[in-house]
Image (tube, rainbow, N blue to C red; front, side, top):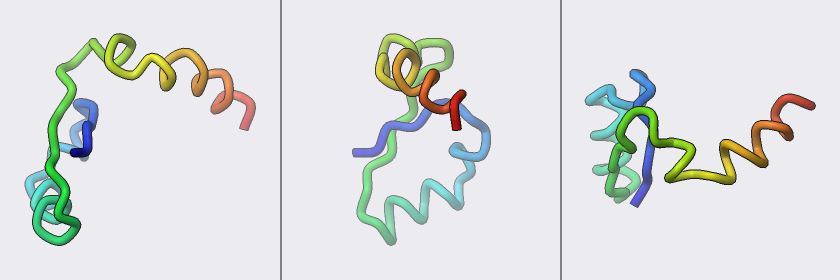
Amino acid sequence: MLMLDSLQVYKMKSAKQHLEDICCTKVQYIPPLITGLSRPMDVSVMRSFKSNI
């Protein structure tokens, strides 16, 4: 299963279909505004890492 946030490009039907059909991946979307709860490493640790790149 691949969990994606609510970024519009991730919700494109063609992208979801490609991931599910070609990559055999189940796609689920994280509801808006809960990224910090569902992906704490991305919000806390990766933010500082990405800002230094």
